[in-house]
Length: 497
Image (cartoon, rainbow, N blue to C red; front, top):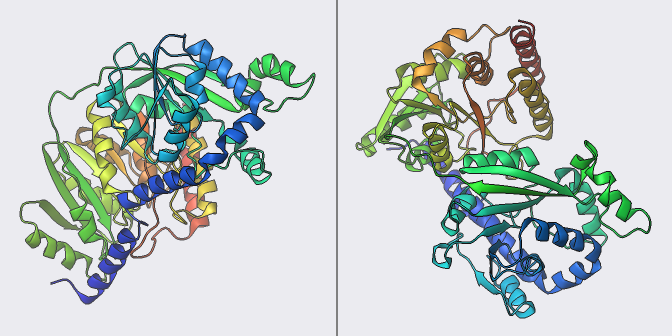
């Protein structure tokens, strides 16, 4: 039977999940909020398009350049159905989750077809020559959307993804407050490199990036010159407001066989999260081993794991005692005991959802990466999931890592990672050789993988607030100094060797 403390903490997790604050329900809540937002404000959309006609005309011209007339075109996101009308398709379909947007689009353009979609169910629509994704910044899970939309494509389809330069976010928000721009719900604000990475993770090949619109308003003598000449100059081009990425779907790389997986869950005083970690753990590969490494908990975490071992005899749940020194050594305990071919880490606070672990598995076994690093800094975070100072520090160290390793890293401290067990002994042998003791283990893993010349790939995850237990990441300045020392040691090894 669960302890009294375990029951209290488990109820807190259950309440958070029921209130759409935690787990997949939080993503569905965002979908519902986007739908409600557009349903509420859809009637004013045409007014804002007319108010910004100069800007939209530039986008129309670019879309006409990319998409020839007379093609079969699918538009995903009907906030601006004018985009679909502008490319003059022989058969045009627009889909959106907002019934109000679909209704208004159907009224304005009766020669086109507009439908309400449910989870991007497009299989019945046939295939298209071009798929325009104009709502990528609205999507709660762009990876799931891009995968689902493949059913509307063939090998010759070209995908056009429209998103906005994240540098323009303050200007956009200010313009909304002034009433000059249509108010948007919470946005992803994906950078061009992040968009390209997501496309590759979903088996698309980015082909071309078009950046346009330096001056979105009509200013005599300035706008035309700025947008047609200055905006095209090297360097300046990256300041433009709108980005259109053209990509093609690739044949999905299927693994030759299913692999066994060991998910290491390092934990210390996480009694309230143990049940959710087991019940929400997806089946991965041909076998999933769940390894709890209890680091001298005092709240009954280990007892709760033992209870679940009896409650779920059909699941391969292991429990090992950690050394009680650091998370890094605790994770090593689990990796050393793991039997799966693929090793994964899932932090016991479940701020990264277990439901996203299949993405890590797919990226690794398909050969896109040899080391998959979770990134919490791409999609919007839930509430106060990460303190502002931690965000700034993480971005600074991520920039350092990208320079040191020669591979793009956007989050150095996300606990969720995946690698092949065959690489672990060599990475383990390098631990402790980076100028300081890594108490969390992330730097040892990343530096070790880079030293072995493994292909590192960032995988965006949805980072959520902790709802049970307390964070173990304290003494931020002291940890920052340790991380800086490790970066200096890596600089000496990687750059001055």
